[in-house]
Length: 126
Image 1 (cartoon, rainbow, N blue to C red):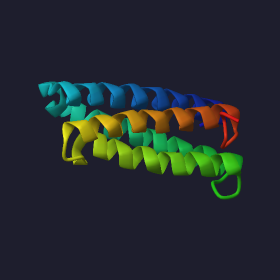
Image 2 (cartoon, rainbow, N blue to C red):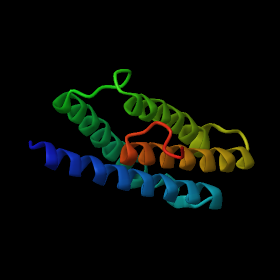
Image 3 (tube, rainbow, N blue to C red):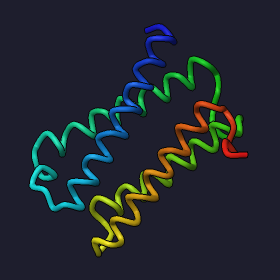
């Protein structure tokens, strides 16, 4: 697989993952039964697995790794924050208010990851 094709797959998965997360977050806030639909439970795992796999392959092919490059380290820690906040937003936070706050913070973490990827700067707002 060519590097360019892999990068396009990665970026496509980033967009699909973000849209899917936001949609599931909105469904959670509204108490929609769509959140329990089989496709809603399976598709995010397929997209996120493809996203992670393409990220690992891109890192390997390019020789760029977290903890060697500041911007990839920023993305790594942003991803950890996004995963924790996303889990709290969709399932783990005990109150709806807590879930809503975690949803907003997860979207901020997602935006941080995307901005770091685009600028290759761990401080994209500076």
